[in-house]
Amino acid sequence: MIVCQFIRGARGIVAVCALLASVGLSTDASAQTKECQRAEFEAVVDEAGRTLRQINGQQKPKFQMKLRALREKRGWSDKEFRQKATPFVQDEETTKYDERIRQRLFDITNLGTSESESATTADCKLLNELRSALGDLVEALEGKWSYLFAKIDKALAE
Image 1 (cartoon, helix red, strand yellow):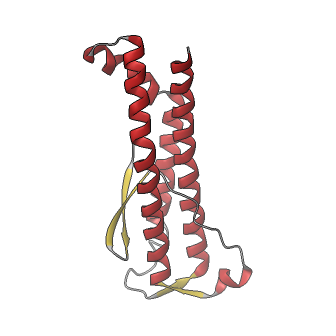
Image 2: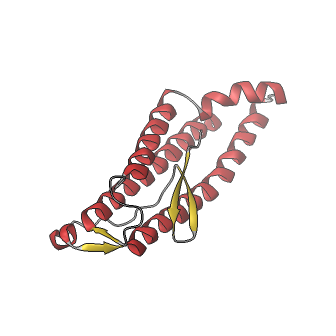
């Protein structure tokens, strides 16, 4: 299950779908207190959106190809495929990843909600929190894909 959340970015609303590449974390103390421009926040969100689309765009077709190979190897009919492929894409572990992803998306969308949306500057501590949350989101998505590939590769090797 892929979870999407919509976040306002420099190019309008960006769909952030449960996968992100690392977006460097800044722990510089001076960055914790200085003001950051709205454009900096938008750039982080835009980069995250690009990263998520890239990860999903690369992994989804590869995974679907492996699912089809498993179907062929096991001789599943169309009806059997839907039923028997489900445990390869949704189980207790993927549910944990999905929950982590949902939580990070919730955290991201609620960062700075007490701040005025029309503000042009904000505390850079908030920007660092955003980077951290997006980094964790990417990590969770990459972890989920790794788990799914390990599971299907094992089944294909049997």
